[in-house]
Length: 465
Image 1 (cartoon, one colour):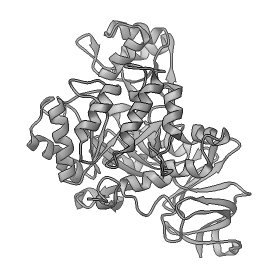
Image 2 (cartoon, one colour; image 1 turned 90 degrees about the vertical axis):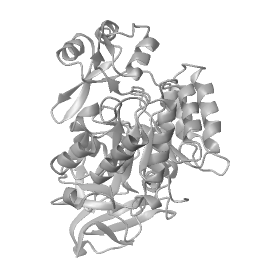
Image 3 (cartoon, helix red, strand yellow; image 1 turned 30 degrees about the horizontal axis):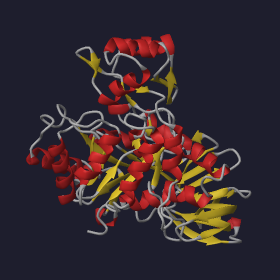
Image 4 (cartoon, helix red, strand yellow; image 1 turned 180 degrees about the vertical axis):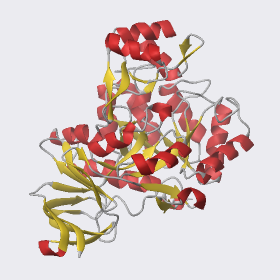
């Protein structure tokens, strides 16, 4: 007997080329059968789809789920938004590993370890042995690899290049928020990042965040960066659809610790100091993240200022993203029809900007993207980027990860992860979760946890090497 049967939905699976009315039967954590008239009596639970879109589970390739940039509320927030799989882009991996079973709301979760001078590195010019050590620790702890937090906490260009090389040598997933001690989180930093990556492989995070008009007008910045990315088959990337960013409110010695926060203040015409940040918050320029119930929301003005004064180590969101850059990164294609920026990301999780389904489906309604395009950018490509070979499609035998979409309302109405119902009509009902690790993860860390081994040789970064 099947565990769950979805009846009379429109299955849209660009990976297999399917778009038609179809029933989907689930047994355990796998897609067991597809057909036009599967007997409702053959399943423990039968759910009528009434023509809703049944899509492969939506994957968010860049989120934040730890106290480093937000908090554990992000698990609930992602599940509520209709996401089935997410990759944390800061860690610590140990925090993800220790909390995800009780917090994950049924999601599939992977994580990268951020490398930060003064935290897990001695400084901005760490040795190769230091870099090797932090990469091996991430893999041992259950992470997929590392993230260079250049825009926030930069390394020297030389150290950045060596970090990418060491990650490639170890076949660890390597993501890079562009920026070094010589270039910022802007177009110049992104172009430098492409040069530093060279012939190695890497994930260049959130492309449109480097196109906010610091060097040229945003549209020109996007076009210039796209020309570089078109010919770099060894670089994968993502872009987000939210107008607000995510950064830190923490101040050290009278000024914001994060370079990104300082740049946002400059864009708003405020001093790049703690005093300038306080004024900006009071005026409602950034929102301050605060927990309400099981989710985080953004507060503004005097209430936000009071929260920041009590503890400045809170996430902030500035409305600094260019709508032109957002649109162009979302829809632009190469001559062969593939996307220049292959994935849509939220850079959210615990940051209140989990809108890839909502705003992505708006682009479908406005005919900037087809529905198949949307699913390619939110499921098919993200699965291939990370080597999630059993995700991104609803063929028989694939993981039972499903997101049910309402195109008129531009939202997810139901989601299933690993064969478990985790969300229905915005109500999160999932529990537990599956940790996505590599074969290098310690068996000790897997005890009493559901886990899945990922082969990095199957990822976009290393499949051609």
